[in-house]
Length: 463
Ligand code: ARG
Ligand code: ZN
Image (cartoon, rainbow, N blue to C red; front, side, top):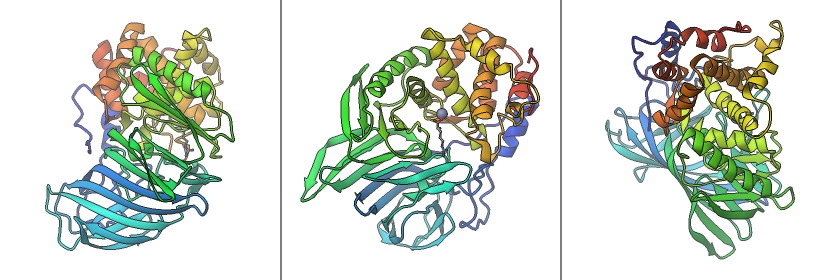
């Protein structure tokens, strides 16, 4: 399910036209599929031209004792052009076989790509499947600046946390933010080991000898960086939160999930009032001792590295609207995820007897102009700084407060509902936000966006 950037309307500012131009994906041409990506400015190798994935069926059999994964991944896609070969992002364990539409296909691995050569070219517009069998111990990505992510083996199992480009460590994927797809997970483990994923369990666990298989389904479109499995010893709590299953789990060797379970339900109700209908069919969260030092907004069911505090839960639940349902078109727009989620924390505090959003804003705004806090550009922080707390999270949230001050409380409240409604289960850019904010407020907001997002300096008080 790919969405391409739309043509800029005449009303959009020069800034918008500029940022869109740079975001246009690399042309497919006669690509060397081992090296070409989908044109993301920060992750140029990720993603693959020529096809659109509709569904991933991931059959994963995992043994915690030796961390071995035996897997069969079936990628169902539609060809956008005639395909004599096609690329997938894949950095996982050794491949045993590849089938295209059930027939053996040749394949090559190079760098982060698995290139598949079907016996016969796939026709333009054809629906096809690629089934990859692989086996071995998947390995995490340990990046000096982005930290640890991808498939993370734990004492008693494993957790997969992919943001930004870690999905390829455990399945072959078109790792493009714009190619959302639905997912089915069949997770097989030794009896007594629990396995969870995004979405909802389908049917009862099936035991066959000394192993058990559970199936989970994510029925709404999901970007690959939000896909998740968690395997290990877990205590699972399931009940109802406003008509949705609220499924939380925690490792019994650590802190329990009572605050997580309760806060998830509260935050979901509180946010639904403000941002409109919750985009998925279930909610919840998973607490495990993963050791990465961050929580992740994995779709419908975030993962917390240890017991979270209330604001962290509010943040990850907010991402379900801002990031998961409405996903940036490129990683350069990461502030659309983190700025909104941080802003929602500030709103929650304001509404729960804490400082007002304006007070929180003022506190940060007092940071002297010469401070590194103002150094980078929030709307284009650079590959190494996508998780920079000051630049992306805090200044992202400040940008939204500056916008609220410019358009007024009422139009801003409309924007907070309209944004997730207009781009539900899709992708959007900063340019789309500017356009929507201008439409709602009948004001020219280009200069404000420019000062707050595209200038590496403290904005003046009126900007
Ligand atoms: N999106 C996550 C959050 O805001 C942070 C993810 C950090 N990921 C990483 N690879 N360091 O909660
Ligand atoms: Zn976040």
